[in-house]
Structure formats: C-alpha cells, structure tokens
Amino acid sequence: MKLILKYLRKHLGIFLISTAFLTMEAVADLMQPTFMSKIVDNGIRNADTGLILLYGLIMLAIAAAGAFCAVMRNRFASRTSQTVGNEVRLDMYRHVQTLSLENIDRLQPASIITRMTNDVTQIQDFIASMMRMMVKAPITGIGAIVLIIIQTPRQAPVMGLILLIAALLIWCNIRIGYPKFNLVQKCLDRLNRTSREFLTSIRVVKAFSAEDQEREKFSDASEQLAEANRKAQQIMAVFTPLINLVVNFGIVLLLWVSQNQDEAQIGRLMASVNYMTQVMFAVTMIANVMNTAVRAMASSARIQEVLDEQPAQNLTESTEKPEIRGGIRLENMSFTYAGASRPALNDLSFEIEAGTMLGIIGPTGSGKTTLVNLIPRFYDATEGRILLDGTDVRRIDPEHLRRSVAVVSQKALLFSGTIRDNLKWGRADASDEQIREAARIACADEFIEKSEKGYDTRLGQGGVNLSGGQKQRLSIARALLCNPRVLILDDCTSALDAQTESKVLDHLTRERGGMTVLLISQRISTVMRADRILCLDDGRVQGFGTHDELMRDCRVYREIRHSQIGGGENE
Image (cartoon, rainbow, N blue to C red; front, side, top):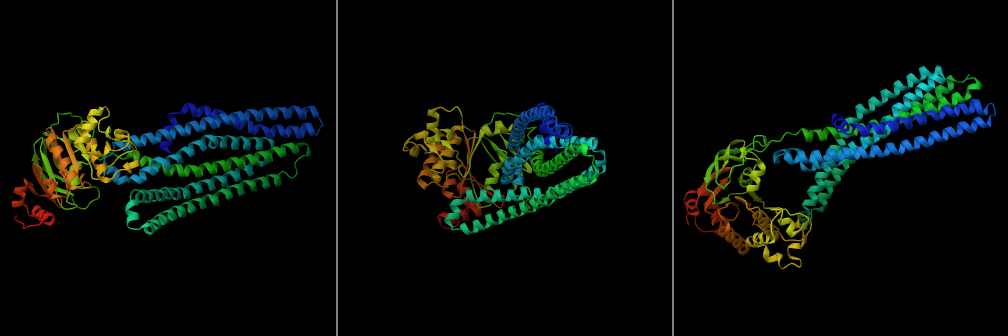
C-alpha cells in the first residue's frame, strides 16, 4: 500500500477535490430519508399539502446537487487513477532500462510485462474505486448510524453488534483473499510466458507439427489461472453474501426492537430503515473495495519488487569517457551467470591491438557469445578485468562505451517501420549517402534497391517480410552507421550463403578503417580471414594466434577444421 500512497501524495490536490465532492454527495444521500420522515410525520399526518410540496422540492434540489457532485467525483477519480497508472508504468519502464541483463533474466521478461500491464491496471481500479466508494462508504455509514441513534436511540446496541460482525468478516476476507489473488498474478505470469514462447517460436512449432504440444502447455497454464481465479472468487462469493446477510439481519432486528414505535413517529422508523439500508450499502461498498484492495496490494508488492531491484552492475562509478580506439585486453577474467553452478568463462587472458580483426571459434556452449556480451557491459565479469585501451570497462560511462561498441547478434532484431527507420537506429542524423554506404558495405543495397520503394520499404514486426540473410545484412549496416571503434559480429552471417558472406567480410576487411572487429562464427572458413583467432572450449582459452599457429598448437582448433573441411589433423 505504501507504493499507492506514494503516488497519490503527488496528486493530493485532485484527491482532496474529489473527496470534497464525494462528501457533499454522501451528505445529500443522508439528507433524503430525514426529509422523507418529515413528509410522513408532519405533512401526510396533518394533511398539509404545502408542507409536502415544500419538502418534496427540497429533496429534488438535494438530489440534483448530489448528482452533480457524483459526476464531478467520477471525473476526478478517473483522472487521478489513470494519471497514477501512467506514472507507475513509466517509472517501471525507466527502472527496467537501468537494469542489466542479469536482472532481466532473474525477473523474467514475461513477468515484467504482466506487472507493467495487468498489475498496474489492478492499482488503477483500486484508486478509482477508492475515490468513488471507499471515502463515501464510511461517510455514508457513519452518518447513517449517527442519524439512526438520534432518531431511534434504542437501536444503538443493534448497530454496534452488526458493525462488529461486519468488520470481522471484512478482516477475514482480506486475510484469506490476499494470498489467493497473489497466486492469480503468478499464474497470469506463466500464461503470458507460455503465449510469448509460442508466438516467438511459431515457425518452429509449425515446422515440427507441435501444435498439440503447445496447445496442451497453453491449456495447462490457462487452467491453472482459471483455477486460481476460481479459488479467489470463491472467497468473495462467501464473504460478500455473509456481510449482506448480517446487515439485513440488523434491519430485521431494528424493526423488531421498534415494534412498539409511537404512530406519530412512524416517519422516523421509515427513515431509520432507510438509514440501515444505507449502512448495508456502505458496508457492501467497503467489502467490495477491500476485495479490490487485496488485488491491488498483491499487485503493488509485485511492482515494488521490480522497482526495488538493484542493478547487478554498479554504474554510479562509471563516469570516465576516455578516447576509445579499440585495443582490448583481458586479465584473468571469469564470469558466472546468476544461479549457475559453474563458470561460463574461466580465467581468460589475451590482448589484441586496435584495428585487429579477431576471429572467435569454438564448440556450441564454449562461451563465445558470453565473452562478447561482457565488452559492452551487458554483464560484468565476476573475476578479473576487461580493459578497453587500458581502461577497465566498468569505469567507462555506459552510454559512451556503447556508442563506441556496436553489436550485431545472430538473431537479427528489426522493428516495424521503413528500412531507413531501422538503419537510423544506428545513427539518427545519418544522411542518405551515409545510409547507402553502410548498406553497400553490408551488401544490403543489392536487395534494397530492387524493392519497389527502396529505403522507404515498410517492414513488418521483426522484419517478417525479409529473409534471414536480408535481416542480418540490415543489422550489420545499422551497426556500421554507428561508426563504432569496436564491431562485434556474433555469428551474424550464419544465414548468408558463402559467396555473400565472403563479399561482406571482404568489404569489412578493406574498409573498416582502424575499427576492431570481433568475428564469432561456427565456420572455420570465416574466422581464417581474421588477423588473430581465439579458440574457446568449455569457457577456457584453448588457443590464440594465427590460423597456422593454431593448426600447429591447438588440438580443438584442428578437430574443428577437420570436421568441417576434412584432411588430417596436421594438414
């Protein structure tokens, strides 16, 4: 609840205005039965038509004033709840942007999405219902109780007993309901995760005719969510009718206690019954808001968990902005993923000069991608150091570092928009000439210029209307537009045919202009063109040198070469 109050304090003025209108609305509701009792006891009993008409007009005016206050209260309540929801989402989004990949892995993307959408919606609903009903309910309930006691003092013990029982039921509802609604949100996380996995892997699912398996996974996640919702709703289904039963029983008791009521005060009895009905309405509103509050409490705890997540990387000391030329040195560097039982990289040490093309090769799972993710600080080394031109990357300002280091991953990530829009992610102010030059080096100009609208061709989400090789070439061109000092190519030519890959690498070799290139590939024919080659296996350096040196001194490299090209080990 602290989270909700924190954001509400920012809009205290609007909240107080809404509360003022809500209070006037409640007062208007409370005045109606009193005037009705006067009509009965004074007007009808004395057959005074003028008095009946006067009180009737007063009740109509009060009703109109109450309706106006209700409209204004709803308006301010909706405005406040939507504003707070927007602020919570923005704060979460900004905070998630500061987190490292290690934090994201721990929180899980599907769960973060659920918290930024459904959990925030639960808080919005609670704020709206609180401003519409939570404040009104106690004003109406307390006012009605006071007026009942004033008009029929003998009802005070009945009112006390009824309120005590109702409060106990509401407390039990909150105590039992909180863990149930927390479980609902966790089940929703799982359903979103299952949906996300299916939609991102739909081609693979269809290729293997695995629709039945995925349908079963989704059905299981959906059933768990439905079951969690059923159990949570059962709590409401039990306690809400019980609360109504208690209050209705109070009305019966009130009538029984008032059986000897003076006929001259029958209007007061009618007013007391109306006020008891308002008490029931107030208690029911409080119970409903408490049900919403239970959900909001569970959601706010999940949102607070994200906001409290401390970045795994300490960026406060990363303020240096040295000139980056591209020299890289690793000193006894090791890295272990959070929760992993063994290191992904173990005691790596090597050095390359600026302007070098370093090929990185090794069996699957040898740590190639992990290594290059440490250079732009997607993760931080757990032991040892990575130095860029003699400066520990952990001391370099992250924005300055990532402007100098461009990464092209194996899975090309493109966005909805035109080809030009996607390329300008690398450099927003790039000229058409610079865009075309980057596309030429990446051999992307060949298919771009053949398309009907050229660089203004629109791409679907993820570049769905392009082939894998076309997306990879656009990703390389986008990285080149950054004019980086270090270019990391993480197996990003895997979807290219041998001829196109050779052309792209030839262009990079000739025109990299002193840029350091880290070239990860599964193909030995690709890394052979590099100045130096790093061979990894099981997170350790197995060899470092030229192709000829590794063929002579590195068994793992010879085995890879033999498996791909053939020939003897010493060939």
